Length: 540
Image (cartoon, rainbow, N blue to C red; front, side, top):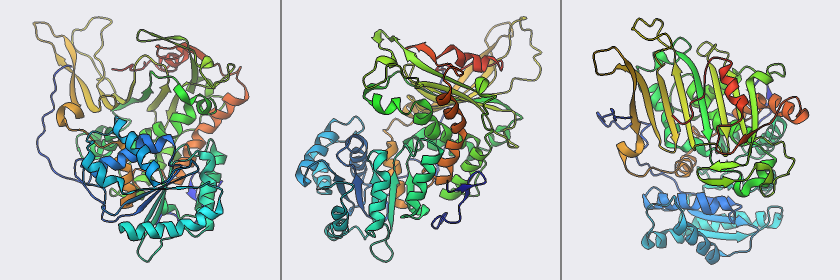
């Protein structure tokens, strides 16, 4: 699989690791740091940005709008050229017309105007070609040289695999076979961005990694996870390591448990065919949610550097206690949404959605209890869940601290002082909140929980960069910090593989709880925490 000893690099691989109430937050001082998301940075070097699969949805919804936003902000280098490469017949003009409509209608474009578009549109080019056509790749080198001369791209190339995952290996092999993976001139660079999903199990992920490494050095490979470009996700490292009051508390001595939730009200929509072959574990856990867990649990790196940060995240994944078949029933839950209501709207069951097998056993909800076997987190459970057609849309990390050791206030026999909870809200209202106990006004000693709340929207106001803007800039600058490394990808799959295998092999032994749309998932999910004397935070 290209791995040994739980994630140590295979020496045969190619050149790895080259380098509520009241808002109580008041800005004190703005000090630019390397974490400062507002610090505008324009890459020093230009490139030809080649999008394989450029006629697809990702290009029109995310990639080109992100590039256009960067143009609006003056952050896109003047020499960047965009080359679409796909089998759908188009020329430069029809591709530009298609992208014009996409940018005009995009909810992620906040600054559209015709003047900026006029300066941006000349960057867009297109070639019609199939991914299995050697002739097209043989001439791609000449096309890159032409665009380099026309736009002044410095000989640099950034490839983006926006295709179906079925074509990843094919495109990479063609690039390697036609000598398109090495810099086209001395001092230049060539990089490749690979979209998720990165494999569908341990074996396929390792096979794809090995296939990529036959053509690209690991330092050239940027496996993108758009969650890592979100403002609050990026702020986890700054919040943890730029505030000295937190680090002494960030351990098993003070933290009771951690919850990570990604709840959606939407169903599978138009993705039924893909989702029925994937499910919640593959779609959300292996990438987004495990990366959030790693950022919360990692040790501090020596410095803010791509490989050093990713080393510490990989350490977390290596420390996860495997979910054995014997413990599966008490550490993993799966469910599938049935018919119900989202708000006032009636919605259909998953099994009746378009392109879904009516007898499908695919999970649309999953919850795991994970244990990290290291000094910092021993005996602190991490509860992770994600589901579709749930009651509320929100994504958050909730860190619950231990209760006070002795309650000496005159409380009733059934009253307790609630634990402090630190919440990192990732969506929809990005921000950070801390609850703490205070005395309520009056003659009696009554303890109430109050909230200190920081919101990006209310405290900064201005629109923030989309995840793809951030990640595309990072790739152009050669900053790999927010991208996944091969070992983390394979380690994530190793954690999930026993669960995936068990659920696939014996459905009767591991019930698929059907939950009403608009609820909080199957009953077994609540039991998962209740067994430990805890409960889920449902949107608050």
